[in-house]
Image 1 (tube, rainbow, N blue to C red):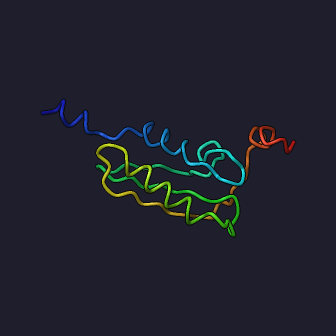
Image 2 (tube, one colour):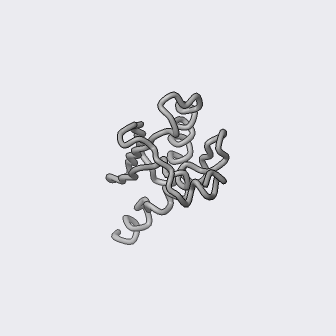
Length: 104
């Protein structure tokens, strides 16, 4: 029975890999690489995600949240997916990301 329980456990890396498939349509990079995902918490089979947007007035914010919920819900064994959008701390792209975007 322990083997069955282990095979049904949700892996944080699986969640992150799915988050890497959700792209900001204005910047053309995934949310994980952009640093918009602040936290991924797995409790039992439920996933809690804390994230932000590139700006408070992000016009595609609600669509990004819906896509995150839909894609993460598609992972085998996932129950509820809760996404909390926060603006504190505000998103601050790293120097590496700024260079990648050609802004340095």
